[in-house]
Amino acid sequence: MSDGYVKHELKDGIATVTFHHPKSNSLPGHVLRGMAQAISDLGSDPAVRVIVLRSDGDKAFCAGASFDELVSIDSAERGLEFFSGFALVINAIRKAPVFVIGRIHSHTVGGGVGLACAVDIAYAHESASARLSELAIGIGPFVVGPAVERKVGTGLFGLLSATPATRRSSTQPPRSAPCQTSLLLTAQGGIREGGPRSLDART
Image 1 (cartoon, helix red, strand yellow):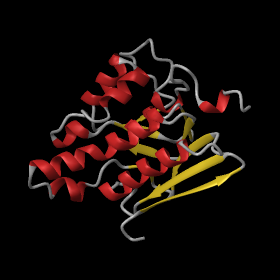
Image 2: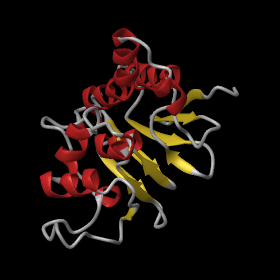
Image 3: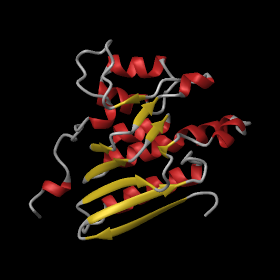
């Protein structure tokens, strides 16, 4: 498992999807594809009533995509495959007919911010922080941007994008976005129209 893993378990209707990579949970394509597949499969299982997304390790919840894979892109095809990784996971979360809850135990960076915003409810440790880091390496947050903007609004999304070196905690509402009462990690919202399957007649 030196190249990372995705595992899942189901108990009493609660499915847990756990991901890990030894480089601070910076995720290569095969891990992201595994996460998307696990969420899709569990969402279609009638025994599943809620999905919890979490990571192993004590450093970062997610440090974004694998930098090693980014610098090795040598064709348009490989570039498309690389940038599709987080999109696959975010779309799997959005399409899941049950609640997807994020367990954010530490800081999250880049694509990890997209995951924290894509879930229906994100529960974060008080020490957790977020950094939208893409512009620091010369690319825009185009993949995760829609998920982040939907969750936190245009103003805060713009601030996060324009300050890629700054970690922001859930206890530090930015002055330039007074309409936000907290940062994305403590936002409890984004329940999709129509409601999750966990609230249907089977309850």
